[in-house]
Amino acid sequence: MNHEKLTRRRMLQSAAAGAALGAWGFPVQPASAARAPADLTILEPVSGAVLNHRHGRQTSDGLTIRVVGQARRGDRVTVNQVACRVEGTRFEGEVVLRQPETDLLAVAEGAGPSREDRVRVVWDRYSEPRYRFSIDDNSFFLRDIAQKNYRSLFDCFYLKMLRDLHAKYGAKFSVNIFYTAADDAKVATGTDFKISQFPDRYKGQWRDNSHWLKLAFHAYANMPDRPYQDVPPERLVADLDLVAAEIRRFAGEESYAPPTVIHWGMTRRTALAPLFRRGVRALSGYFVNHGRGWDINYGWDDAHSEYLSRHNAWKDFESGIVFSRIGIVCNSVPLERIAAVLEPLAKDPNTAEIMDLFTHEQYFWPFYFHYIPDHARRVDRAIRWVTERGYQPVFFHEGLLGGRV
Ligand SMILES: [Zn+2]
Image (cartoon, rainbow, N blue to C red; front, side, top):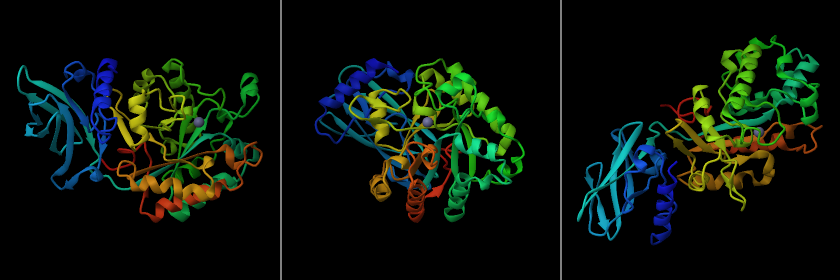
């Protein structure tokens, strides 16, 4: 991250006339960060933007998008050698994307030396409306099955509920698990359930259902809060490896998925490369600002977090990971508000294509102090809403956020 360039761009943005440009440009490619002078800037699209048919005109030939920026008054501007329209200090041009990733190179010529700015964007060429359902903080159902020694996995009401939703809607579930179900005190004394105690005798059943039910690492335990926000990446990766080995042991390779949500959505930036090497291709977060700064955002700065708060996706080229903004957290939204939360997402071209649906396991269990009696109905309502509007179920660890590549 080049803070100098970010500051410059943000200053440009605040100086730009009109809100139409929004908070657009920010640096992503370190290679280009030092090159662009202050008086030529591509503002839209941003570097890392994930663009689909809703962002331009798509034909078999490519996706034609609009490129907007600022240049010195009087300069001639091209983007990828196509002449742009210049009005005052604002330029606008069109570029056809034909590759999965494309560099947009703006060149300005006039008095003095020529200037360049560059961003890179992703074309989600085969994009179709899709949804992913992720359930975080799982441990109780594994403890329940291990303790009750059920004949079938689906004798556990929780997995039966998920299977019923699969049967009804074709829904797929990413179930993100802890190593232990223990609370703080029991982690210390080692007296509560660990997934190393889970038997491998259901392996066949896991495999038979692995086309719609995947298990992934989420954290070592529910507590402490924000366990990976400020720890060395080695700690995160060690916990991931521990859980991944257990999933493979008791459920088999077909049921294993690399994580797509880390507990609390907070890691050090240095954790991203090791996570990528473990197969991580997508990470979801809230990218929310409740007035005390951006949070649940994997530590991304204000500009990136604000962008993600209004877009489905953004790619960090440095790590290769695509970040996704969670669209709804079912345990936080009353049943009658589910549609009202999803509707605006489906109307905005920047959030309409990919629905990142989400909830937490705890709230399904009557013994939990925040038990939500209608939790299953909320999940059903959200999945029904997207299903009726043509969204297809996907897993985010596959393809480009579940889309064909
Ligand atoms: Zn969590």
